[in-house]
Image (cartoon, rainbow, N blue to C red; front, side):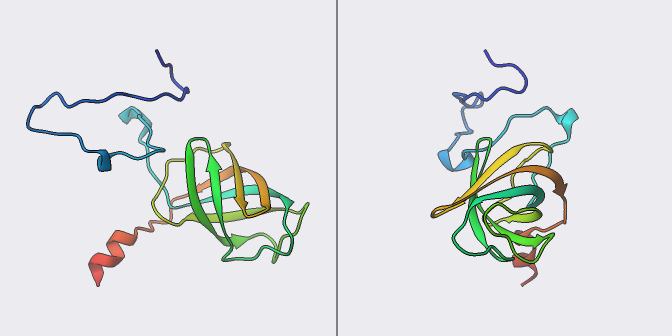
Length: 140
């Protein structure tokens, strides 16, 4: 049995015979929440990060793999509180997911990596900027 706040896996099947559940309907990182929480997946978030190791400098546009709870996805640096970051530096960094929006909470710990580069952080703000790449494609 699982309780609130725990990570678990589910074996799901449809109660309606005509409805079949397909593998492409689900992906790693999905969460099961009640409607009273009003969950919203976001494209951007701000995190207070410290660079553990990086050979050169990190600037806006830098992309790295972010590990945050069960989320594993590449994100790009959109804005930083300072112009550049080197090993040992701390900053507030705005990240934007590269592939799809994710559900994240304030205070969650994250680790980002790319090659030998490693950094740790904590989410300090969830940014609901209204970004939706599907809407932009529909406008074309």
